[in-house]
Image 1 (cartoon, one colour):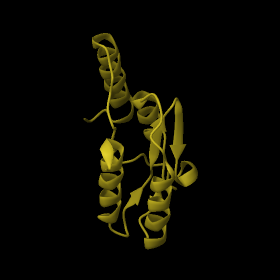
Image 2: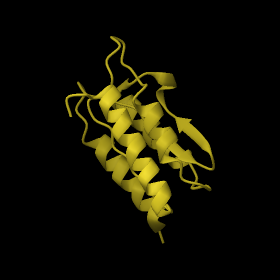
Image 3: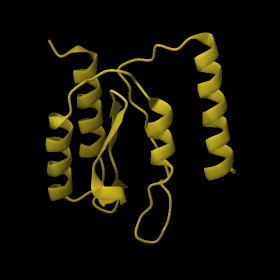
Image 4: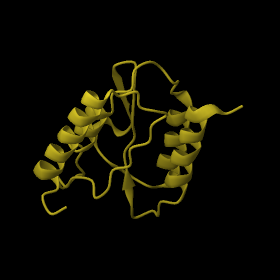
Length: 122
């Protein structure tokens, strides 16, 4: 049985597998109040070696505790490539949110604020 987190892993691996060698990626897992990152703060070119290392990294992460999507999104918009460019796209995969109405409102407002700051054209 693969469970929801297993499905999230599979989708992430499939997305990485589809990347072309001239594309870049970065992985952030969030859980238990911590962030787990690949790439040491820099996006990685989608080489076969980088993809293989990413698959191993993905397999090493265990589902744990509280989902802190806001911290992961804030970190994602801070990631830069060698030229200082931010990511052109961010995928947020989660095995679930348990938000009250108030938490959902706060989360939505924070995401909107990040969009204004880091992607004003959207």
